[in-house]
Image (cartoon, rainbow, N blue to C red; front, side, top):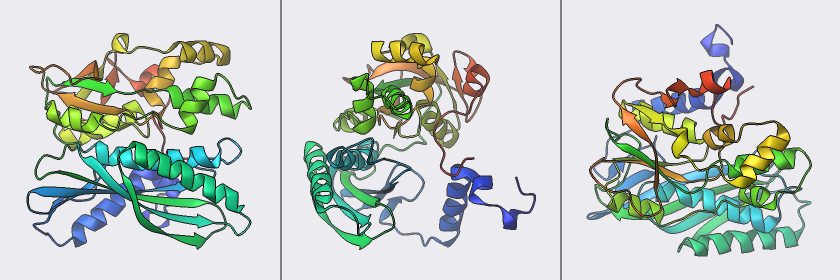
Length: 330
């Protein structure tokens, strides 16, 4: 890493370092507004509109980084982009309402590909009880897609990453590790097990889970896009707590067991560090039953602030690697 901060590259900073710099600049320059309830830094921003609040989130998807046209059909890519963005709104405990779509395309793109992409995008948007509100198109050297998701929540009721308290129960709704397993299969040039490949191509999301979590008293929540441990670390840091995961409480799908065995891998590593399934993980008071669809996998602790431990050990020490996905990492 460069010793001169002024010459540091994105490879030196990493994704988290770059985001921290951007958030610091936003914090320095931001004019406080009574209508901005939650600003940049969470899954989505929240704007108060007298009684209810708008929840807004934007994501970018780049060909070769987030998807490959030789691995996924245009329909699957459309569904995947819509699903991942709408999940951020749901992770705030909000009801999704609409999306904005901007897409950059090479001039060589076949028009049927665009039609199929839009069909998949509209299908997933509809499945989330949301609508396409508008957007923009542009020429580009590769396919670049930007999706802004919009939702609504009762003012003051949005669930952030910063509310977890010691003693809370950690619960998850949805799959984890399936997309990671599918990615490994595709990287090997294979197309089966189909369940894993399909999980990578299109996440299976319960769009009502965020609202159920909020109604069930969730103190914090996030959707698992970068990896279960990595995203729980966001909650741990921003809540000023530690988190302990009990792997005995995690059900490992048979497809993950068999595929990991064939690849000489540990399926639990995929579950703990793999992203793109967009499950919802939240913390709940221990005095309340978990909402329908959520399963307990751990607890919030008062010490080891900002850390997530797996059966008492840090992920890095247990698996010899950094958990989760980071852009710009070398």
